[in-house]
Amino acid sequence: MAINRPSIRLLAMALKDRLTSGRCITYGVQTVSGTYNEIKKLLAAEGCSVREPDDASMAIGRTVQQDVLFKMLGFDTVESIDVSDREAPTHILNLNMPIDKSMHMGYSLVYDGGTTEHCFDIKEVLSNTVRLLKTGGIVIHHLPISGCLEHGYYQISPSLLFDFYRANNFTDIEAKIQICKSQNSGKSCYFNFTSPARLPNDFGRQALIFFTARKTAAHNDVIYPVQTANPEHYISNAKVESYLSAVYRMLPAGAAFNALQLFKKITCMYGCKRL
Image (cartoon, helix red, strand yellow):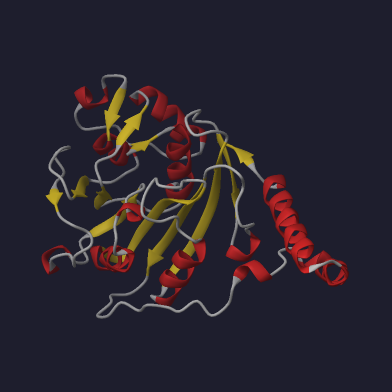
């Protein structure tokens, strides 16, 4: 797993206006692409204040450890969870199983940079995320939503994250869709969105969700939602909804569906910004 240049920019956007301190924990041990000075410039370009690392030697080299990045973002300690000891995580744990109560409500940030899709029991991973966060803590998920067949067990529907965290009284929910130019180029763009109804079925390339939410209260029990509406049936632009609805009624069912998907894709790509 790696935090590359676009990921650093998305982290800066998400955290620059939030009070960041305390303990941070990551799912998996993340490698960070870029030197300390390169990362510092990226954070500053997004208006994110940078805290200098305590140990200057940590900032030397072509890449930095995830500890350096998250401490630059303001966190005091950085821990990690992994099922394997290969990359020397702080905690060797299986997120498919409930986290020990000694870790509950202990962290100001849980960062999931691409682990949930590799775990069989997504329900338990999300539940553990709620348990790990202290009140006021922030969760960030950066997960594949399409174009990533066989990358993991799952490609995540955004409504899963929206519905789950809303059901558990999280607030300050924000999401960006990142669309990658190609698998390995590192070039991508993003757009902000508030509803899964805005998304087409796919973008024809790799796409990820960068999702952020804040925990507002302690939880004794985690709540599991049921999806009550299928977002693909909704038209995302209210100003033209009545016109398009009339057009769709004149088209065969398959053509109407394809026209709706094309309209959504054009709408999304029009609002994209480069990363």
